[in-house]
Image 1 (cartoon, one colour):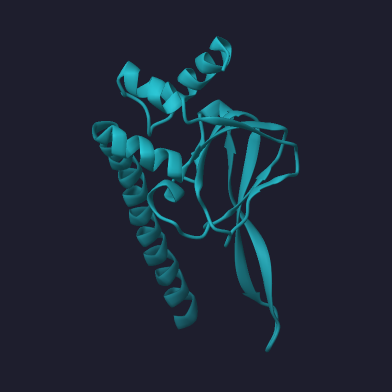
Image 2 (cartoon, rainbow, N blue to C red):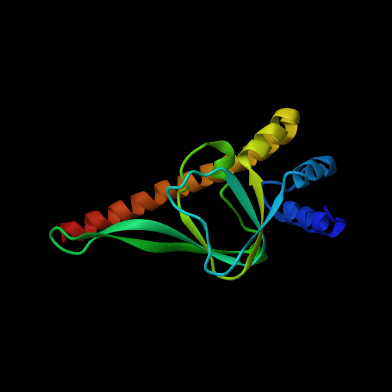
Amino acid sequence: MSIEADDVKRLILQKADFFRDLAEDEITAIIRIMAPKKFPSGAVIMREGDQGDTLYMMAAGRVEVNKTLTMKFGQDDYRETEKTLTILSADTHAVFGEMALITEDQRSATITALSDCMLYEISRADFLRLAADRPSLGFKVTLRIAALLSHRLKKSGEDVVRLTTALSIALSQ
């Protein structure tokens, strides 16, 4: 691995919430398990429902996050449609797929490259090996991921309350 590539990885880690404030030796340990992955514009990086086993950190490019929704168009006419949830950019040091480091579960959304993308990947197996070898590092990263997931769960709960309230008001009129 070239020094230049390691410098890019180090910068990405220092700016990503999950890895910010790690000690220098901890950052170096994570750099060793980061693998570069290139995706051309239009490529599906991960598909909702597929088995997840990697986290991605964006070094360059933009991606779109989509979720499949089932919509009713008539009495018995239900169709699946894609809803764009957000657009992520390397400019904001975006990280996605973090749940795969914690659990072996299906991807919760589809991520598609909107431009040519350079990503760095960390596999679940590599992360778990590193966490077993360096429990303090594993704890720090896992705690940050848990905090993010907790924040998202709280926001989802608030969104459900807002949607339920709006639906209740609409149906009562």
